[in-house]
Structures are given as C-alpha cells and as structure tokens.
Length: 235
Image 1 (spheres, rainbow, N blue to C red):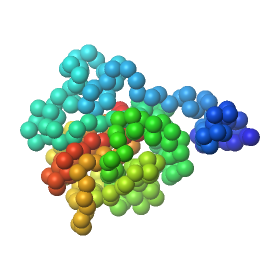
Image 2: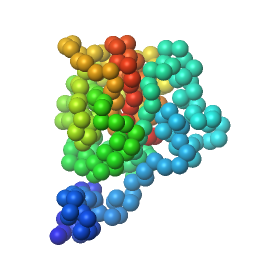
Image 3: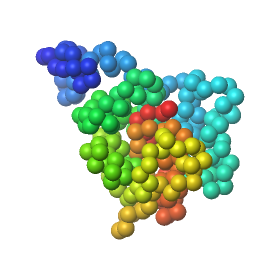
C-alpha cells in the first residue's frame, strides 16, 4: 500500500506488523524521514514548565526549576497559579517550519501528524478526569487562519472541551517584551455556566509562559481548583 507523506508529499510504504492489524492501528501519516525529524522532549527538564536544561546555560537552572519558573513562583500574584506545564516536542527549526505551515498556511490536516505523540504524552502526565480548555484566538486571527490550532489539538484527545475563554488582546504575543506580556490583559471568561474544578489548558507553544499563566489566573479566580497546561512544543 503506497501513501503520500503529509509533510514532504513523497510516496512511501507504511510499516505495519501483525500487531498493528490486530489492534486496528492507524498507519503513520508521515514517512520515516519526516517522522524522525521531530525531537521529543527528553532528558532533564524544569519540573514546572518542562524546559530542557540541555538547551540552556547552567546559570539558567536553579535546582529543579529554570529561571523563568523561579520568577513566576517568587511573584505573589503568579505563585501557584499554574500547577505545571508539559509539552511534547522541542521547538527546533524543523518544528518551527511544521508549525508555520500548519498555522499560517492553513494546512489543517497536519494535526494528524501529531496525534500519536500528542495523545501518548498527554496521558503520561494527566488523567482522563479533566476538562480541556483550548487557548482561544482573537476573531481576527481565527478569520485569518480558518481554525484554532489549540482546539484542533484538544480534539485529538477525545476528552470534554470547555470553550470558556475569550481573547480580548489581538496583538501577537511574540512581538511584545516580557513586561508587556505580563501587563496585558489577554482573556476574559465567557458568560454562562461551566462546572469543573480541574482543567488542562491546551496550546501549540509554550515560550515564556505568559499566555497560559494569564489564562490560568483567570480560571483560578473563577473558582477552578487546579489548572495545568499541555502544549505541542516547548521553546
């Protein structure tokens, strides 16, 4: 059976054994070369945000925490807002290219390239007794892209999803300084009732943590007992 790789569009033969047929396992949508190009997070990492210590200077490590997480925990308004973040891939050059093609060129089908790793890693760190809260896009961004990548990722997990957040800041976070990100009110709660006391925020990328921390604080203020986050990649 010949199929075409979702990324490179080259024809390849999926590798399937008897165990795959017995468990009705879906064939990989990527060829071996493209699949091996993804770098799963591995080795020693910050216990709070999952940043790989191998990618930062020794001075950026403080015991089990990185400098960013130490700052978050030392600030009264942010301490204990986010229980933890866990991610799947390293945000290297390959991952940047894939995410750019997926998000900014509207290639929605590429979400299938992440399914197996995304689902496996999620259930390594979280139980199924949680509600997923995708990080929302502004109306402008949603119109530009045609879909919300965070919700697309959340839908891979087949768990309850609560769209309880609304983005009120339409500016790109990547164009702001750390201080500007901290001072910007990014979200508000949607009106209506929603009941759950443990949730996991879902997004495509964790960089400084500003986005998920702002969302988590809003949810905690609304009565959420425990808020963590899970992202596709960790920069």
